[in-house]
Amino acid sequence: MTTLLINIKELIQVREESVKKVSGNEMKKLPTLKNAFLAIKDEKIIDFGLMKDIPSYSAAILIDCKGKMVFPTWCDSHTHIVYAGTREQEFVDRINGLTYEEIAKKGGGILNSAKRLRESSEEELYELTKVRLDEVMRLGTGAIEIKSGYGLTTDAELKMLRVVKRLRDEFDLPIKATFLGAHAFPEEFKENQEAYIDVIINEMLPKVASENLAEFVDVFCETGYFTVAQTEKIIQAAKKVGLQPKVHVNQFTTIGGVEKCVSNDALSVDHLEVLSDDDIKALQGSGTMPVALPSCSYFLSIPYTPARQIIDNNLPLALASDYNPGSTPSGNMNFVVATACIKMKMTPEEAINAATINGAYAMNLSDEVGSITKGKKANFFITKEISSYNFLPYNFGSSVIESVYINGKLV
Ligand code: NIG
Ligand code: FE
Image (tube, rainbow, N blue to C red):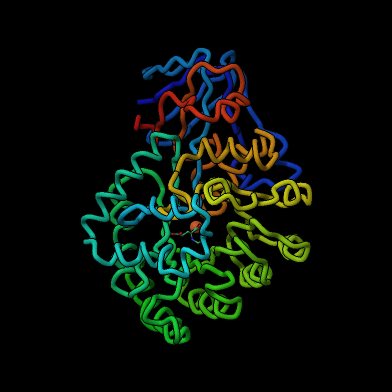
C-alpha cells in the first residue's frame, strides 16, 4: 500500500541520489518544492513532485499536509547516549567557577561517568538509552551515531557497544556505533599511558572487530587527553581491523590533530571550537567532514566552532548534538539548528543542510537518509502549520514538529 502526503506547503531538502554532501557554497541553497506531494511505499520514498503533477495511485493512505512542511529527519552524527547517571553536580560546580578541565582533573568528568557505567548492568544501560533514543526520535532525529567511551575497560567498553547493537536490532532508524575506548586515561593507567594504549590496541580492538560491534573508531585528541601521536597510533591500528576514524579534536586547543586525522582518511573531525588556518588548509580537498557541536559550546560556555570561516572557505560542515551527560545533556537537534543560526551565524539553509545531508555523510549514510530522494528511507517529519522554514530555528525554544515517521511508520 502506498502512503501519500498531499498538499505539502513546502517539501524541504529535495535532492538527486548523486548528492552525498554539500560544501560551503552549495550549503547556501536549500532545494525545496512548494505545494508538493510525497509518495511512500515499503519503507522508502518512491516519488515526489508538485501537486499539479500528482499521478493517480489506485489505493493509497492519504495524509493531508495543508499549511505544513515536510523535512527529512535530522541526522545526528555524534552522540554518547549510553551512560549511567547524570552529572548535574558538575554543572553546579561550573556555575560556581570551576572549568570543565578542572573538574576532570579532580576525577569528575568522563572518569565519573566511567565509574558509574562500570557498576551498571547491560540491561540497565539498555533501558536508560532506549528512553533517550525514543526522546530524540520524537524530536525529529531519524539516524544516529552512538559512541562507547564511558567504559574504559575491555568489559565495560564491550558492554556499551552491545547495548548499541541491541538498539540497532530493535529500532527502525539507522544506528552507527563508534568505539571510543580512547576517551580518557582511566585512573589505574594515569602514570602508564602506553599500557592503556596497549589494552586498546591489543585487547579491545580485536574484540570490537571480531564481534562486529563498531564501524568507526574515535579518540579524544586533546591536551591532557590523547596526544596527536597517540591518536595516530590508535586510529592506524583500528583501520587495520576495518574501523574508519571519526575523531574528537580541537575542542580546547589546536595541536595538529586535524591534519593527522585528514591524512588518515577520517570520515569526520568533530568539535573544532578552536581552528587554525593550517587546520582549514588540511581539510581542503579532503573527504573529511568537519562537524560542529553547538549545544556543547552553549552548555560549557566555550567558543562556538567558527562556522563562517569553514563555510566561507567552501568547506562542508555538519551539525550534531554531542548528547552526553557531561558537556551536552541534550539531544535536541532543533535546538542545535537554532543555535547554529543564532550563535554561529549560519543561515537556516546552511544549518538545515548541515543537520541533514552532511550529517548523513558523517555517518556513511548518504545513500539512505539525509534528503528527500527517491529510494531513500521514508524518514521525515511533518511540521505544524508554519509560515516558512526560517520559523524552525527562529522559534528556538519550542518544537514545530507535529509528527515523525521512520521507515514510513509514525513514531
Ligand atoms: O564530546 N570531549 C569529549 N567528550 C565529550 C564529553 C564527555 C563528558 O564530559 O562526559 C564531548 O564533549
Ligand atoms: Fe563528543
